[in-house]
Length: 396
Image (cartoon, rainbow, N blue to C red; front, top):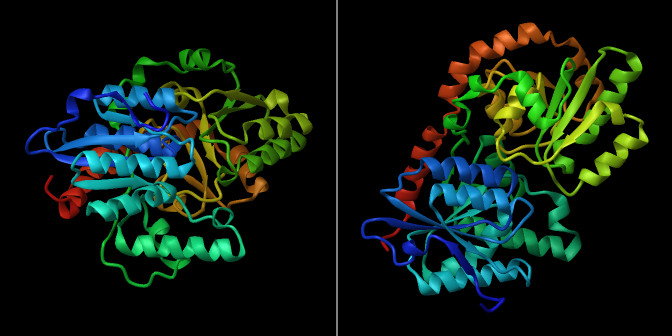
């Protein structure tokens, strides 16, 4: 196999397609974190009778879990070449479109969309850009580079179907790029697969803590997600420092579950502040059920989100949550029992943790489970995504 060729690692029997089904080409430059879980939940619930999904994506940190998801869902995965960076993915998208007929492209994130945009235009395939995040300044660069990148993003978004996972994110994109009016757009909130948590009563808190290596008899504060600046983990570190110095609560530990480029940095910060006894770093977990069973409260100190899955997963399990009022997250928890605090404020995090009456909070969040299940059911999301596909796809 030549190194510059995309590799079909599963689903060979789907190559030629089946009559009556719509071929959807999914392009994901970074199939990890929320994007990976989105695909795991949404593509599980999309009709297999109507759509045949091919995912083209490179290997990343969570590739093992991602490939297990794809295999379980019986989707077709093309392992893309990224030796040439994002250009390698764009070339692979071009090759796939030249070889096979597709009804629609769904790209996840701006970089994925840029990789798929020109090939999609050349072959006349409609393109749905799914927006999972903000347009960060650090990604745009400075000076002429920034001007060019903004121009490219703006030109592309004007021509594709824009699908945002929250109203907050849609408004941010429209304002950030000064887009004015746009006709082809949609807002579809994320959802979670309730089947992933249907056996919650079979895992006890004690057993879950044993599985994750967490202590019994202590209050466990959970942090779940990728270690990156937007998640605000540094503010949680500072909050724990305050809790320790002010002796507001005793016998607690933070279970920090996940992976990411900043993991080593945050470990170092914890050590510098001599907080090692208060933090346990737990590797990425493909099965989140034991995590939500093991922790007493989930804390999300995010600086921004799109429409995060973690608070939904927590609430369908009855796990209390403390979240910031940042973009996307505030929209997700509106009308729920979530404790909402200002972002970038360690004191507010510390106070929310120390003031939470856990027994009372567990009752309140347990009573909210039926409402959370109805509100965050991914099957509702999937039906809306199907409607979007049907509205813009073409015949193979």
